[in-house]
Image 1 (cartoon, helix red, strand yellow):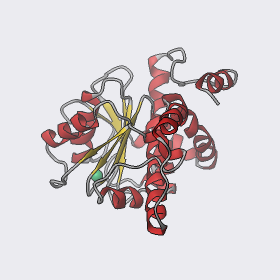
Image 2 (cartoon, protein in one colour):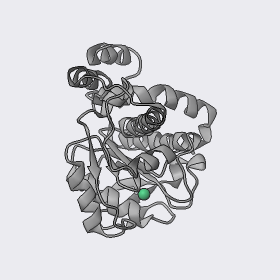
Image 3 (cartoon, helix red, strand yellow):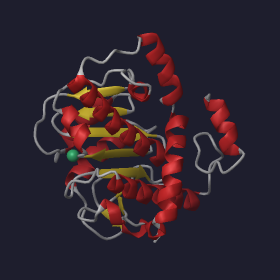
Amino acid sequence: MSDNQVSDIVMNNDGKGMPGAEALPVEEERLQRKQKLAAAFRLFGRFGFDEGVAGHITVRDPEKLDHFWVNPMGVSFKQMRVSDLLLVDHEGNVVEGEGLLNGAAFTIHSRVHAARPDVVAAAHAHSVYGKSWSSLGRLLDPITQDSCAFYEDHALLGEFTGVVLDLDEGKRIGDALGDKKAIILQNHGLLTVGQSVEAAAWWYITMERSCQAQLMAEAAGTPKLISPEHAKQTHGTVGSELAGWFSFKPLYDVISKEQPDLFD
Ligand SMILES: [Zn+2]
């Protein structure tokens, strides 16, 4: 299915927030972003991506472009609500909401948002398969249709130098990410970005599963690689911004119906 076909289907239903759709009034856009963010946390919790207080997903404020919304440290992904989210400025001050700001959330995400003006949202967690894969210091190979979303579209930050608490290290991540949609932080985990919360969260979910698939395949044998030509072509289909946004929709539909308190 092409991006145009997906776009026609969505626009004939509810295309709110779709990449390329008409811009919403800023208040509505802000609320939509926060609702999608809270839902993304609930899904990360459901998938077991939480590990203690590690992990953060951020979304840029639609009005104050150097501010972003983030989860307060110490609140479970599984219980995140819209009203829990913190608004943080470019200096790391919490300017709206109550709660603890995770230092690494600020140093990593502020630099990624600064390095990539096109990025609306970024996701990072310490999920098991992503961090296991990250220890190998290798990029993912195009071994499945799904992993082609990352073909020539993810980067590797080599050498772990401790918890990311200074801005220079955050900048190193932003620089290494370049114009890609994801980065493997060696001995640490995954970070994904998108032009919407939906896309950033979906890339995280499918990248984590691509890590799982490659770990399993390599434990069993030697996976056959998809040819560069077909990997490139498949990247154009499953790896587009619109595909990322759309792939999140069924997950959002389920979690918002099952856990409506996320909207509180
Ligand atoms: Zn981390």
